[in-house]
Image (tube, rainbow, N blue to C red):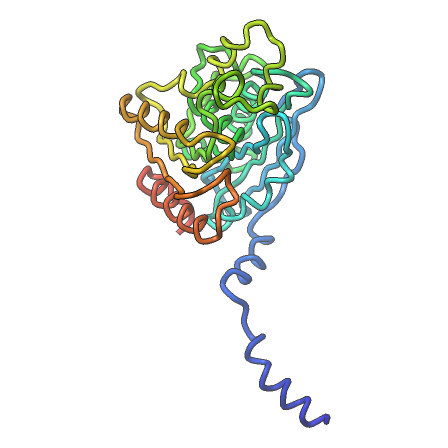
Length: 295
């Protein structure tokens, strides 16, 4: 029995002699990144708002991703979004994972204000965390996609960054919008109203005007950073036509942009094969716009 066991072990050994490429990368990632959790980037409504920074250990500056979680501005947290960031780690980007005031703490436009403050904080701390200020990309899913769009599109003239000190709103290098809301009134009081989304504006008397003020479609104009939108054409939560409207408006304004349609795709939860295709497209889009990560 002993000899047979040793023989089987010897035959099995080659199978364990090397890791898969993905497993090899995972074992190296811990040495490649240093985490700085729960940094306060602004105090608003009497509450410290936090973000996590994952910085590459090798000398920078490095391209940096800022991520905003979803939840219709009323739910979710940054910790729940961590696994979504994995493809960006593999691409060699610094990463910033942001929390912001939800509707139960502060109504609109609080979340937009916070996300702009997070961007300003990252730029102000660029030397500390090896951030390449010319290669900052903002992204998020659903409400996070909306917040990525507003962070990259809102002009300083709106005053939506007045919650935090420092220079005016920095310009980002690109926006990756995953099925984000582009017309807030559509999901607040329009034909595609969602009750959880409506809590973000509560009973504010000027809710229609505020919805317009925090809608990405309001700020479409020439000179915006490149924008890539990912959206399933069967999304039951954020209507696919919102993505189409943004794409058409950006085209008319001459803004470099791309709409990636997932046939039959719902509200995220795309298959591994679909996500692989999406990230290959994102890589191509970034490279085309001078934003490739590590080689």
